[in-house]
Image (cartoon, rainbow, N blue to C red; front, side, top):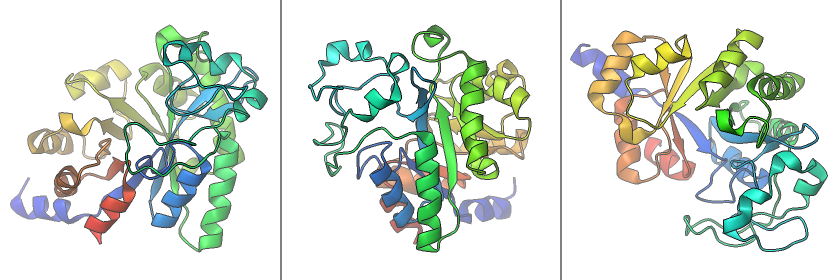
Length: 286
């Protein structure tokens, strides 16, 4: 790559991906967080989905009631040692909806403002955000939807890949946002299934291991549209190698929060940056 093309790439403005909405500012994966991120000006909302006992697509990072986030169905505090017993895949959504989240400070995000809320359905998030975008008169936002899946979790914390992907794709299609949606997963089976079910759907392979990228793509069976790497695994040399070997691959590292790291990621010239603090990234870019 020439010095000129390197400078042009570094100057490109990356997309701002609000991680779980804006987790550093408001409780994760809640409507208040998504709406605030939208008002700040993010380009893409990143969120996680799991499945309830009655086959509803629920926006939640864990497939159980995380003790640090909120209460149980009866308003009880949850013992962290027993939180996996509150398995969302075994609870109907009506019960999940009653479980309050976000009413106390998050232990890992000192600046996060408490805001009592709940775990919404994916369809509610899509409907609410689409309406808010129109009301704000801003361009439609993109969606990065992570399917939380592991082989060991099949039939325990979530359905198998075929049903999981079918349920999520149905919600995306019903909201007519397929063209602005990317499905993300660490689980290659999810992406392989999505490729079969919806060949034109944008897909992102997530990674948090130092495994060679070529090997990851060989195991996947195809080159995904997006590669979502833990930013700590990246370097200028690796980014140049990926750019040369996979010219159409979009690189969106996660989760970049501190100002020096955000500045470095901007200089990398990546397609997008996933952050818990979209306000910080917006300030740097402006």
